[in-house]
Amino acid sequence: MNGVVWIPPKGTYPRFSIETLKELDENNEIWFGADGKATPSRKTFLSEAKEGVTPTTIWPYREVGHNHEANNELKDLGLTGLFENPKPTRLIKRMISLSTRPDQEDIILDFFSGSGTTGHAVLEIKNEEYCQRRFILIQLPELCDVKSEAAKAGYRTIADITKERVRRVVQKKNETDASKLPLGATQDRGFRVFKLAESNFKPWDAQSPTDTATLARQLELHIEHIREGRSPQDILYEILLKSGFPLTTPVETLTLAGKQVFSVAGGALLICLEPQLTMEVIRALAAQKPERVVCLDSGFAGNDQLKANAVQIFKTQAIPSFKTV
Image (tube, rainbow, N blue to C red):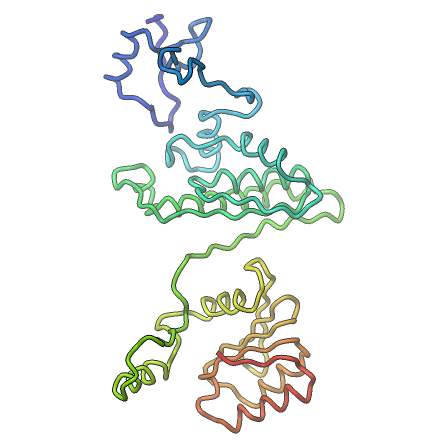
């Protein structure tokens, strides 16, 4: 005891209960700093250390931040107390600076994104160096404790907190930093959210029995081979991946002959997922001169003549690839 009353900063989670802290203090296991006024931390004794060496770091907190700073960063975004022991962005920015180059389009991958510090750090460093670094954050939809501040704030999973933090960082950067960019410079602060799921298309079961009744059931199931409840956006991104395009590929929505068409990579690939295709939209697609066209097979509604005409029109316009799914 040193007579100084210490209260954890608002919005942080103490690592130990009051009872545990009292026990540690009685055993002289708490360090209050040389002047007795530092943030309390637990002592590590040589007898507890592996091979007689206590853990150390070559990156002091004055250079790369600490948990209190990380909690303040969440507080500035209006996310106070939602996450235990977040990492400071300064720490991640140091790691990014050492392992990537500002003149390269590096991708920083975080398999356990938690509160989204890595995404926040990449957006910060992009703004400081005007570079084209990108990030991929992966987080399981781990449920928040129903009694936690996160759950009370309406966040069902850890992934929900991750997404919201990145959204708020992007919004804040767009609002405050636009005037700081060099003349003619731009920053891509957009991001997309994807959930891992099974294919939108029902697979053909090649291992099933080949008797007439079983084959008939399989054929019946594949009359409509797209899974129920899947949106055009779901199907679009699966087609992108299967066509060899990354998920970051620019996609523009066009209206051709009254139908919605997705223009991928500046028109290199056109995808029409309309349930009812017409000769007018086929001609409009061909007039765009894409390298590839993909349509729903069901869009032809069994009209073999329309499909045959589509094949001939695209061939006449020297469009290399036309496929239906």
